[in-house]
Image (cartoon, rainbow, N blue to C red; front, side, top):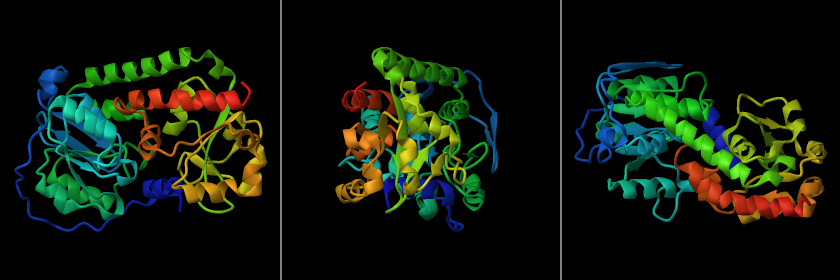
Amino acid sequence: MTIASRRITRRLFTAAAATSLLLVTSACGGGGKGDAEAAGGSHGAFPVSIKSALGTATIKKEPKRIVTLGQGSAETAIALGHTPVGVEEYAWGSDKSGYLPWVKDAVKKAGDPLPKQFKGGDQLDIEAITELAPDLILAPWSGITAKQYDVLKDIAPTVAYPDKAWSTRWDEQINTVAKAVGQPEKGTELIKGIKKQLADAAASRPNYKNVTFSYIYTSGPGTLGVFKPAEQRVEMVKSLGLQVDPVVNTFKETDGTASSLIGLENADKLNKSDVLFTFYSDDKTRRETEGQSLYAAMPAIKKGAVVASSDNSFVTASSMINPLTVPYSIKRYLPLIDSAVKKAGK
């Protein structure tokens, strides 16, 4: 199974059987150094209530021990001056240290201890979370289930997604996290900063505006999928100035994944995409995928006008938009896109 299909499956079918556990006070360190003072302070923003699809979290005072589930919330919390005490692990995108490199670097820069990591998804380690003694659990972009939520909310106020699992917009996630830690104005500033970084990068590459692209994936031999414009990895590329191939909007979304499984037999529908973005779980998968005649026949594949990094950390970073992943991604993305655009003859 490719990483694309694993991630989509993770978003759709996250489930776990939760059990009752004793609350054990942990000796782990608290929130980020300087916390609210470093990031602007809470200024009496509490108590605050945040409604989600799974329930309402009421946060009575500024949180000091934050745990994050899913993706992206840890990065925003860190950017707001609140280093989590615990985060869901994501081994595929981590470096040799076992941490996502942009998270590790930001935490070290803040002078804080690295968060404890625990299993998530359908193997969510409730016991590990309990031992961290959190006073806030952030999961606005995650796949936690109602059953998991019912246990988590008894450990600490838990902020889940506003509508469906894995469907929260990136700016909505930042606003939610910022509100939860009592810094809504700072959240607005972070969003403005992200948009400016992307706009500045787009302005540095005016030739991108004449380039169409599709972001594709496979889930096994004979398959082909396309991510929709609202999916964060597509939105990042689009924000860098490239144009989503109009054909992508004609494909029906598959099961709320912000993507469409169109089948390899429809690969020719992407013939007008100047550049293709994708990723492979390993070199063997890449060879097998590119060895399929219908796949290899796509014009962008023939020309080599493909952005397909073998750096799993970069693939992960460029799949989500938040205060830490955007600067990390931009400087790595532009050279790869430049090369693909040149091969496309644009």
